[in-house]
Length: 551
Image (cartoon, rainbow, N blue to C red; front, top):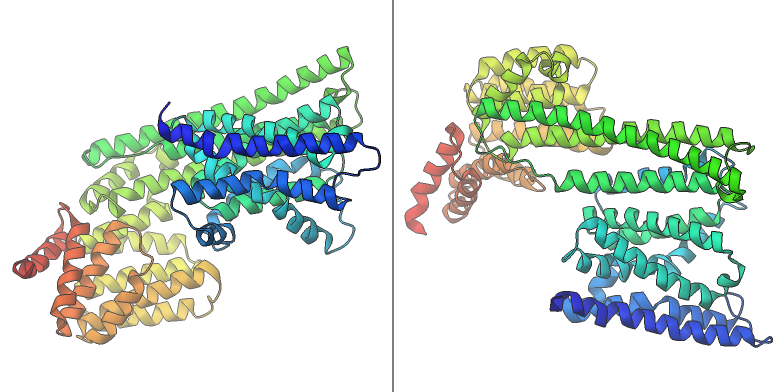
């Protein structure tokens, strides 16, 4: 075992458990004295809970300070960094829906007053969410340096379980739990480990783990009684989803060395494999359902009330939950895998900067009647990238033909129609037809004038700024072009867009006589262009080469 793994045990895990153990022993001794109260109802009980409960947060923060060079300010900032990508909040909502499906489809939550959920949530952050400084923020990432994700999560679960048993001795709840209560609690804890670990692994956000932990605790406190076997079902589906997300995330697609034919064949096989994996996952979910039915027979035969389903008055509820889970999982997995698949296809253009290969690949996929049931040509996402690729390689007639097909398919979707007008305007710029480009801009403004909320508004602004900038550059209004391209460049992530925008910004700065700034823009554009082989990439390299002697 290397030093990196030893330090997480000696500097975090052992001190956290030892501190909790010492406080637990004190709490047990005090509990044995009849006139000393422990728990949340007495000052001494709250003191013990604070000292024992904050052990993981304290030693986690200490570990971050000592080994990861994080200050207290850094940790507090991470703890309350609410601004995170929307997709991670959506992921949390999905997990919460699955985790509390039995409650949602059953008797619902117990809400005695409007303020009650908020008060419980705030308490759950202080007496639950704060633990994440130790477990997800510190311990599990160190485990993942040595072990795979699933093994690291299980190791974290074991350590977290030991700590929780000690914590139950501190707050006095251990005296009210039966053996079966402990077992089902540990099943829930294992589920939470997978939920929280996948959230942290995907987002790197301490706040999202703190919030999710607190929401789970809040939901659990406000829930009606749920048939234990339903809780097991929830746990299994959450764990499956977490593992699928990690497995899919770890799968990297690299088609850069493939030609167009090989790339098309690769994605056809990739899509077929995804469909097989999708149906296998659903089959596994159905098998789990059948195992639970069998388990219920065992419970009925041996009379174990916690797992008896058959003959129970809640069996219809259980069946409803099973159907709910299978349908929900089918939808979630399909959407997740489909999005990932199409993003991987788009990388041929966006990251590999190979519009020629994307066009050839797209045309082959379009000719394959089995791929996407022969509807590739009308698929907005794939066709949108095809139009962009055609424009990059100045195949304007192909781009215009495809735009006509897409317009007919998306007549009522204003933001998409605006995007099509942007492409037509960009083609007009390429053909030196400024008047036509301005007419396209007018159409865009008419289409997006009513879009003033959310992502649609952001996309519409980006479209307007983009075409306005191209027109300004063509009309040699360099000051306006500089401002617009600088604005549009902010937040861009894909390589080909950054290359194109840096080049256009460099032209604008050159027109303003800002030679040094223009050189920096051309240098950055050339870096993004790399060894890409198409007309714009060649122009970028030529522009940078003209300044190369000034380096």
